[in-house]
Amino acid sequence: MQIPNNLSEIAKIIRADWKNVHYTAKPYLSALETLDSINDHFFEDSARSIVCYFLANAHSWHGETARAVKQKLNDLLKNPNQ
Image 1: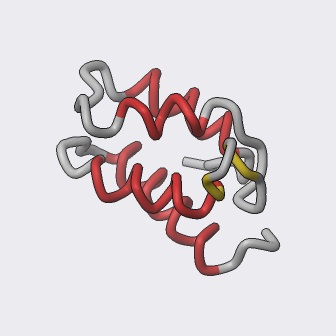
Image 2 (image 1 turned 90 degrees about the vertical axis):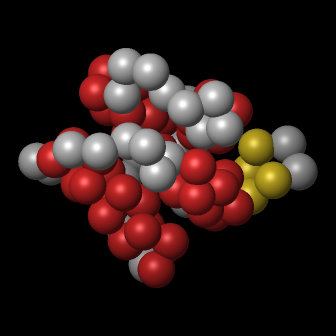
């Protein structure tokens, strides 16, 4: 599965696949929907911190899509210039 670098596009993939988003992940997913790049900001929070918090709270999301998206988000954290 090809996952884009754009965070709002990734958020669409997450929403389509994760039918019952865990309540602790919802605010971070909502923030992701407004971001384009890992280098953006959501009010006072960096996109990097939002991605980290999302990943920390997405433990109940499983499956092939979840693995691919989580890997992509981790890759973006490691290499923000993708």
